[in-house]
Amino acid sequence: KKISYKFLLKVNLELNFVNHVFPSGGVSGFSYFSLRLKDKNISGAQASLVQLLRFVLVYIAFMALLIMALIMLSFSGHVNRFVLLAGGSISTLIVMATLMMAFVIGSQRRINAFFGFITKTLNRLIHIVRPKHPETINVQRAKDAFEDLHQNYAIIKNDYKVLKWPLIWSLVANVTEILTVYTVYLAFDHIVNPGAIILAYALANMAGFLSVLPSGVGVYEALMTAVLAIGGVSPAISIPVTVMYRVLSMIIQLVPGYYFYQRRMRHS
Image (cartoon, rainbow, N blue to C red; front, top):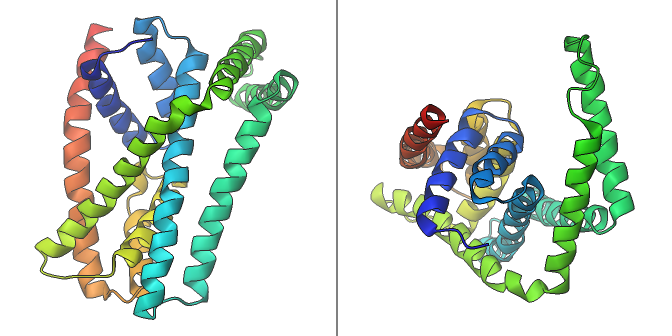
């Protein structure tokens, strides 16, 4: 389906706002993205598959940067057991998560069993809080959505070459984020090893993704500073740079995201 860049830009800004303000490991973003694309007659399963592929491609593309980071750190003499463990753990996690996702949604029986179990479990947990609603999430409708997700995945699997450019743009997106952090260091008149920034960025984002706090505030900054210190960057430098980067990033994303989100809610 053809969707205008203008529409996708607005939705992406709204999505960034939702994911930052409502910490849920990306679940809020999945739901909101599906709702927004209903305006374009795109099913929830198709929207969810787009989101899944987006995350997978971004993390796969980031593996190339992780390898570069380890090489850069090795030349600087800052490769220790923690650095190797962190880089190896992130790479392993990305590969395992990607293979698991492909394994689950590659079979209609497996996808129904896996997500059916999750749906029923969520219903039981919600039932504890809302006893009068034994089936908050309609199981049959959920199964229909899972079947649709599998069918759309099969279409992409049969023509996987269409993912070439999305993968390239995922790499570009990762590079621009790293360059943004590095530019802030240059603004503070400090030249640091890009490898340390790449590794710190990866660990901080993974921790922030799972944090219960909005945007992973506190967790993100602390972890990024700690990893940079191991990579040879003094906390006296990394703390103000990290805080400034986070402030600039949030202003750029949250202010327009909030505007478009509120406008959409009023129109709804």
